[in-house]
Image 1 (spheres, rainbow, N blue to C red):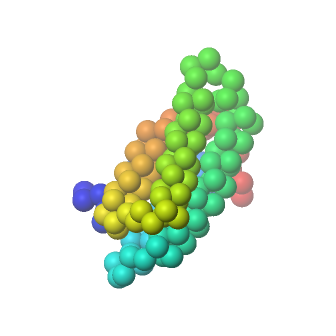
Image 2: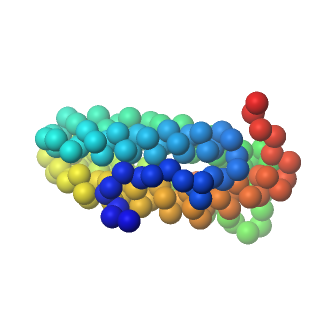
Length: 146
Ligand SMILES: [Fe+2]
């Protein structure tokens, strides 16, 4: 897959945790919309808007996952998996913040640079880190919302 092409949602992304999967679909849609919007003129205003909206939804989503880690005992495991997971979230947020600081200083990124970073991060994080969390939650009595 060329990393800056739209992400095609498929069932391999499912973690089996309804609220995480719904939020992941929103994130994939957000990235695909950003992809379409960046097909035209890439301005600083547009990059600022896209990264601001993405960061705020990502932070909300990370909080959802990190709350579930607490509620179901994942955070207390001696393996340190929860801490590694949270560290991935923090690293993502820090990279987007750094990118936004760069924008303020006039350092723009290209559509390809931005989307290859965002798409690769999200896909890798879902496929490895979030699926591991999903499996744990499902094995420890996760109750669906509905
Ligand atoms: Fe996560």
